Image 1 (cartoon, one colour):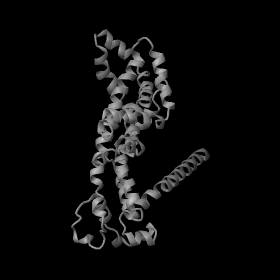
Image 2: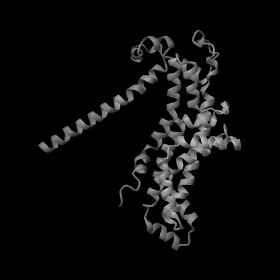
Image 3: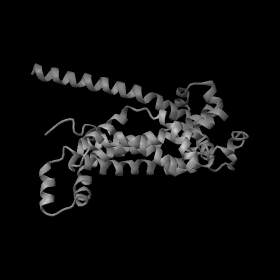
Image 4: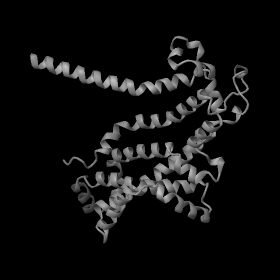
Length: 300
């Protein structure tokens, strides 16, 4: 009986501490959300908690301005300032999606083929090549930006989507191959041997067996790569600055900081808009996340 009481108290204590940590972690995000609905004067004069007792002070005006939606609405008279009609993050969101989706899918496909080859196909130099791939994990991408940019300028890829797709693919491949190799190499050998006996080719085994069985690892890397590309600013500045019409969301937010640095109410709305899609991707795939990260770490 005493043991059960101690176990119950331990669970209550653990869950209580975890709940407190979660609340403290979410508090800044909640404050950002509340501030994104407040007027400029309210944001500059009082803290976000002041709006909790006055729901009438909250509105969608900040989101209308940042997204460039319904700017002719009479409600925005006296709120919309000169120059704010040109913010329009909607186009930047489409550009970010145009960059992030292919830059996530392409390295996953290449890495999946590579991981299968390293794990199940015997060829000369396999181990040496795999060591080189793993060694690339320790190479910071910053040292490659300028040489790649010089080549892009010669090839007329600077400022194009193709250029940044290739850049993100190259920077993400080492980690992708490593994660997927750990998972693919731990799949039961009996399944593959049975398929070979039945006359299946490597391509058939890869598409019919490896890909379906590797869903946790694929989803895990998809989350990491998508979040990395979506939140990236450095690579976008280097490879997309030559064509401002292709600017992604992080570049647009940086422009708002420079142009509207005192309009924190608009920056909070823009920041929260940039958070929505990554949160949706993470929560929709989070059940695979831990399983994919632990792939290959436990045998049996």
